Amino acid sequence: MTYRFALIGCGRISKKHHDALRALPNAAIAAVCDIQRDRAESAGKRLGVPWYTDYHEMLEKETVDVVSILTPSGMHAEHTIDVVQRYGKHVVCEKPMALRLSDADQMIKACDAARVHLFIVKQNRYNKPVQKLRQALDAGRFGRIALGTVRVRWSRDQKYYDQDAWRGTWAQDGGVVVNQASHHIDLLLWMLGEPLSVMAKNGTYFSNIEVDDTAAAIVTFRSGALGIIEATTAARPDDLEGSLSILGERGSVVIGGFAVNKMDTWRFIDETKEESAAVVKEFSEMPPNVYGYGHERFLEQVVDCLEHGKHALIDGIEGRKTIELFNAIYESVETRREVFLHFDPHFSRLGR
Ligand SMILES: NC(=O)c1ccc[n+]([C@@H]2O[C@H](COP(=O)([O-])OP(=O)(O)OC[C@H]3O[C@@H](n4cnc5c(N)ncnc54)[C@H](O)[C@@H]3O)[C@@H](O)[C@H]2O)c1
Image (cartoon, rainbow, N blue to C red):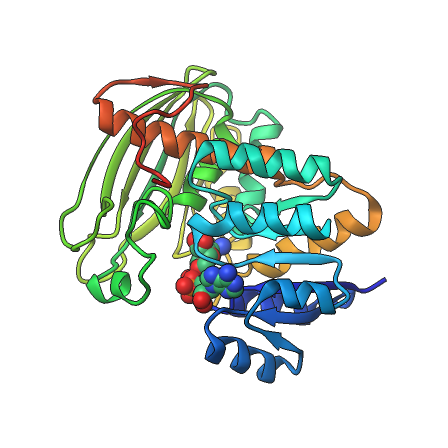
């Protein structure tokens, strides 16, 4: 069977979805839509598919199996819930799945009620070095974990934030933690499990935006491990680093590269330096841009889940975990206190 995807949003990330879907043998793009007519038209013409400026019209006219939500972050919940309740379609939703925790919950409920899948795009989980790290953790190779660190030191100037009205706002985007560091934080949670608490501070240094361009947080995991999150878009003049490191009693792994694509360090006490060097070489990859290779691998899994009735690796429940931590980070910033999970956000400005 060929799964037909309708895409809502023809902005920057949509091209990754176009390329990935076109490369998959059992997926096809049924139609595209954007409220900005020129974007919809140019994507439709380039892909040779019908294009719309109203997604209701698109979903009423076209035969579709899956709807991809590629709109600004603060709109994901509204669009997902609407598509699921009115049309009962499976949804692929770009990261972050939502900004407010209550929205993430509503999305999960709506998809459950409609008996459809909700797939959240976290393409970096499919990166070669990331998969290798996860296998090592599953195999218990690290022993006890002391520390996991996420370091995103990227450069985003005023021009970047000014290109679209939603960027750099609390209501539609969220700060550096939510937009730029979201994949790295997702990976930290995927590796280290449930967080118990978080303490965070942030600041806005070099851009004229509502949200933070820099944040620092300390996470305590239920396992006892500590996590450090350092995230900024204020690195100048260029991107410096985007990395994830895990330090355990029997080994240390650091994954870097511009899209968590490069095994920087792989060292275990039960392995020779030569064996480690071979892993570093074999499990690094060089994607063409910061979005990595992962969209194709991710969408391949989506189709595989649909075709074979499998459980999604990153469903709504999995996507919600990062949304809860993001809100806990911003709750801690506002209250200047350690925030214990699980919790209901009261002061986090995300999505407001
Ligand atoms: N997975 C990743 O690595 C990755 C990378 C970049 C962006 N993203 C996420 O993708 C989302 C979109 O980001 P972007 O950079 O493409 O933004 P963008 O502003 O370039 O594109 C969003 C598009 O959605 C359109 N839109 C808004 N409301 C609409 C509606 N009701 N119907 C149809 N179209 C509508 C806008 O007109 C715009 O063209 C964000 O949530 C972002 O966080 C994910």
